[in-house]
Length: 362
Ligand SMILES: Cc1ncc(COP(=O)(O)O)c(C=O)c1O
Image (cartoon, rainbow, N blue to C red; front, side):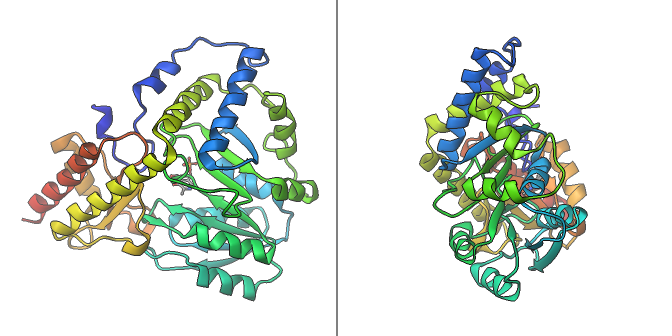
């Protein structure tokens, strides 16, 4: 299959330079060569995320970032506020619940955003909340929540802001420090143009201070162990070298493009994709004021049949798009425009969905 035909919202296509980097032979993971690569990688990620915080590149998928953030900054019974506008927010809340936190969940209808009014209200209703769990880009509905406006509100309150940026970081501009994000977590297989297998986590001084108080048992995910290793260029355990080589090459490509140009390319893909679907008479699923620049969700005409439509697009065009998740699994289609793409790749995928849906409706 043409790698440019993978148009699901992650894993995303991996550029040739990144594939090439993975051919590199193994090196000692406790040697100076690795330490230098690791140090450079951390610096690149700090630049991409606009942060001076600790950066930990942890083996595991994005989900491990949820777990790492929780066990390192909180203690059993702590109050946390979680905002749910889709399946990933719900899963994040589920992890907090599984750990025995006192989770206050605020839900909005899928397709809508968690705005600053809701965040203010939740903090006023739960002043004892130690942390806020916030999903920047809800991949299951195609919404980007207004993190830049929410961050300062949470900071004023004093709660820690833990942000799931799995499907936005690396693709679009995030001002981690300026926006007041204490812990940010992402996944290598999305905007970072790398294979699945790494969680990218940033933790600032407030998060590290919380770590020294947090009483959840932890070992492999312990931020203090990571922080002292990373300071030397090491990782606490054997680093998955091939994935590190890949992410390092991808970060160089990201910085070569520049985050401003990269963000604009993603914004443009979002605008064009929404326009294509609207012109063809489809209903966009996400509130356009908060529509994501990394994926677009549309309602399937007739309200069901998303899974069949995905299969038809694959059979006829050899293009992979995604159906919905959880309750929306058969009701919406999601087209990913994340990471490595040209606008024409996305137009081809959107047009294929339109053509197949039209044929199927006849
Ligand atoms: C917003 C969001 N959070 C968390 C996850 C979970 O990441 P992973 O599947 O890499 O564990 C995903 C995966 O798609 C996601 O999109």
